[in-house]
Image 1 (tube, helix red, strand yellow):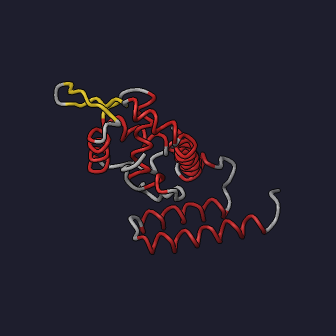
Image 2 (spheres, rainbow, N blue to C red):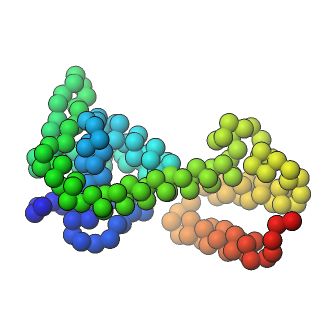
Length: 188
């Protein structure tokens, strides 16, 4: 569709760090509206939920995207008191159909990220599973490994929040450590 802004429509690949290109986000929003009409806040929460908290768009991102979709005739809005309910239009549905494989890939990637985030939380934060002690992640481990894991967790908490460069440095350290652990032998 001509005139649709940025993102996937330009033929480029899926681009997502902690934010989407405008066109990518608009397509994802349209796909979510195709499921059912939604409020802006619901869209924020749904994206947060599907990504396991990795991607939480701000109202300053969602509402301009919704306004753009409304202005271009891809979504309609209905006022419900102070809230607005957004519905996909027929032209919005057509755009979703035309881009369904890219939208599925994007939503699938978000969901895979969400699954990975949940897995990481279970390992490093047993409280997220309803537990209340570090030992629940590895209940039998009372060794030096358990002490080192607790030290690592403390170090990460002390360094947080980190800059983009510091995050890359820390991720590199953790990736090298994981690779070394995996290469050094079998469990037993």
